[in-house]
Amino acid sequence: LSCSFPQKLWKMLESDQFQSVWWSNDGKCVAINEELFKEEVLGREGPSQIFAKKSMKSFLKLMKLYGFTEIQQDSQRSASLPEFLVEEATYSARSQERYYYSPSFNREHPHLLEKCKRE
Image (tube, rainbow, N blue to C red; front, side, top):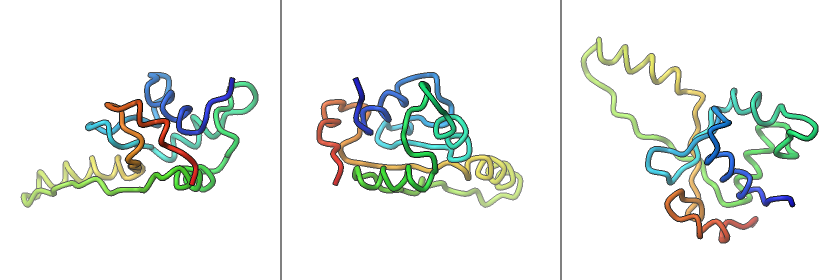
């Protein structure tokens, strides 16, 4: 039985099998580490393949078709130099992370998933 794109994405987020995709802290956004996602998810072939799309660009286009929009995560930066440098190192490590939001895709409200349709 094949699942729809949003169902596959939901199952990945709920699984501990993937390091490249996770729920944001509030459960309202999908967080993706793009470089790791390309390798871990889009690079799969044969029976372990999850999505037909192989490129990040095609995958993100599909997300957009299902109503996801990229959002910026707010991060307050410190004024003091030592704190700023620590934050900058963390920020740099997280620069590959992207966050996507859809009003029909929320961890706390799985019933909304049926409203997540291709536009």
